[in-house]
Length: 204
Image (cartoon, rainbow, N blue to C red; front, top):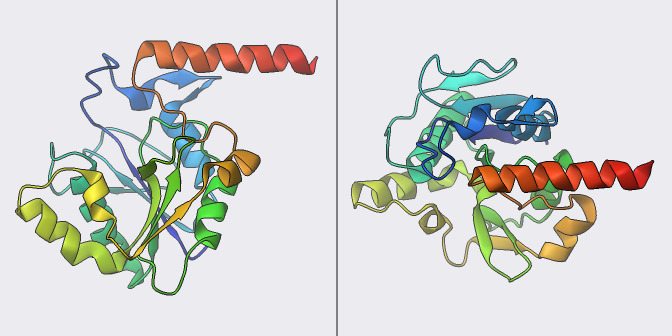
């Protein structure tokens, strides 16, 4: 994963959660810290967020060039920053609401890349692709910019037909259980906390 640039988008409105999800705590760490830990093997790590809002050791703060435009706008900022620093490369793009991501998850996606691919997305158990917690190549930057200029705001539009590889859920579950489980509400966070408590009890 050394050659892959990590990027986390943070600082969204978190309307369903009721407060900043990035700062919510699970097992003694913030959700942002959980996701950042999964991307630690990447040698360049970018935090796409409002200036001064978060401090994350080892991460380069990059302002969102289109504040309020959602994760597609953050992806544009991540691809541009990665390309400026590294040239043509892959970007591991994540939000802060998937604290069960792990280094093994990202390695599995990276191994699925093909010579013609420009995006790698995970499939959930229902076969649906997840555009967040995915790999995108900087070659997509112009297309992402064009989508945003045309009024598109859906992140899934960034994964081009014919140039996107998908990874089956069972392969990811083997190496990174519950990686696609996200936190949208306080109830979701409470459920994760309860799961962790039950697992610790069963291991005693």
